[in-house]
Length: 85
Image (cartoon, rainbow, N blue to C red):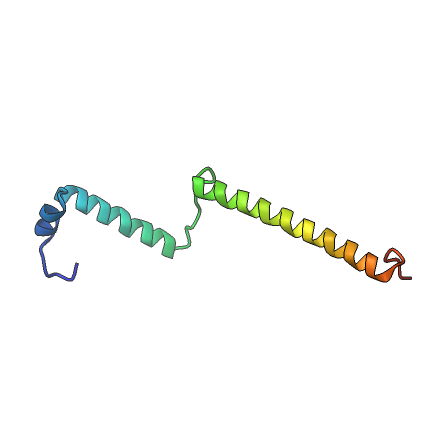
């Protein structure tokens, strides 16, 4: 990649055709240009997105449980059910 070996030599060593190398290189450069231009949208059905949604759901449940426990603890500490008016 630093110009020490030719593309042909790199492809021979890695066992890929030069056509594949240039296609991958073009695809990589185009993806980089799109990202730099602000195109960061991803398909909503990818496994990564599904896993992140599951994780977010799990974290929301934990926060809800902790909030409920904190409210109950505060009520038990005040002894009057938490109604302060």
